[in-house]
Length: 124
Image (cartoon, rainbow, N blue to C red; front, side):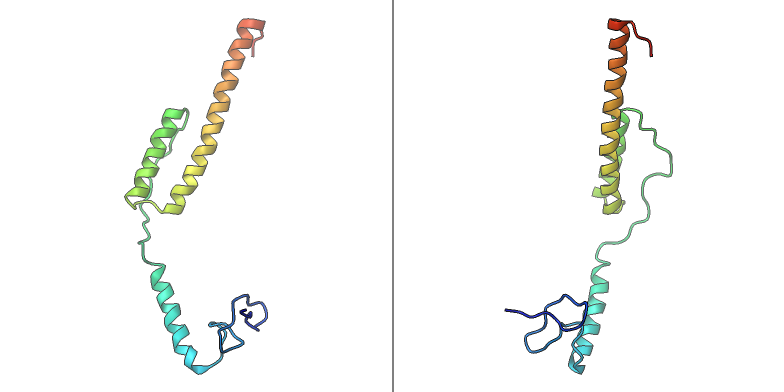
């Protein structure tokens, strides 16, 4: 069974012939390998271009489900065309879910108030 690296706080597995993980092994032959691995990791994170052009710089009034659907269509298209960062699209999707719930609840509340006015004669 594998062993953990002996460096305090490190949770990586030690290499087969060492008490250290790849990052902490003090042997000189690993120095260049670590440098190349770090450089490669940095290049890999740039695989997808960072796109700064997002949604148009306007205010969106999301007063009903139709407005929300149109907004989400823009978000989805932006994510699909790679003109919007995926994390931002995910966040906007979650916010739209919350807004959908709010719109639905306010619609139900409005309908209930109208029913109360008709049936009970209660004015709000």
